Image 1 (cartoon, rainbow, N blue to C red):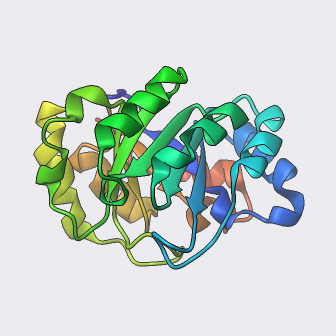
Image 2 (cartoon, one colour):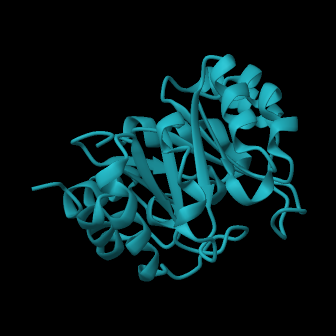
Length: 218
């Protein structure tokens, strides 16, 4: 298992970008474990967000690991840029590349942790054969591309499938709140990506602690 502690990774997609540095310092002070950065290209998903320049700007602001989620077509093309910008863990989608092994190798060659992700409609069997090569698997619990969607509880069956045969982190992203966090952790999740459940609250520290305590491992 990736960790005995439930890790909280607030997604800056839900932060106030007019004061992004202050927002990131606030979640770090509030007890966040990672900073989750959603990268969308308008091709793989129907939205456009941020690129490596934002990652580079964020890097000096925090000592927390930068957890970069590439929702982009042909992710291998961008791995070097995001690694050089200061990412600590880079996750790409299995559906977006012909050779996941090459993408994983590029990330590892840069000295970074490697993750792979699958969309809700993708069969878990696509991960067979590469679980031993990656540090994290991200199971999307909403359709990637937009925030504010409802949690798809059926995706936790995928977590239960791979948990007994994977020693790395299992992360879920989408629709996380206190109720769904508990269900996710019970299924075997280590890392919870939370957007509005943190950045949509008045007190980030309280929101992070409520997520963590509500989903604490027995």
